[in-house]
Picture 1 (cartoon, helix red, strand yellow):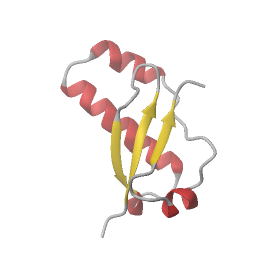
Picture 2 (spheres, rainbow, N blue to C red; picture 1 turned 30 degrees about the vertical axis):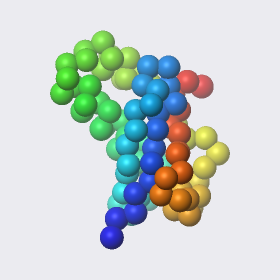
Picture 3 (cartoon, rainbow, N blue to C red; picture 1 turned 135 degrees about the vertical axis):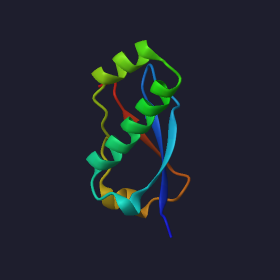
Length: 86
């Protein structure tokens, strides 16, 4: 059974973009960030947001002060912020 967690962008341009990711299929924060990034990129591309796609390529997404173990032990609805504004 999948174990989903709620990830939300903390970003000037992408604030509020939300994605539930199955953490059972990812073993590092970098993998999770990559899934988040690729999903956002896919949506922007699908809807032809060319300028936002260019801005997305400049983003350096990261997660502050949380480990994979923390994420595994979090509640399903706990928001985990993925930041690009630091």
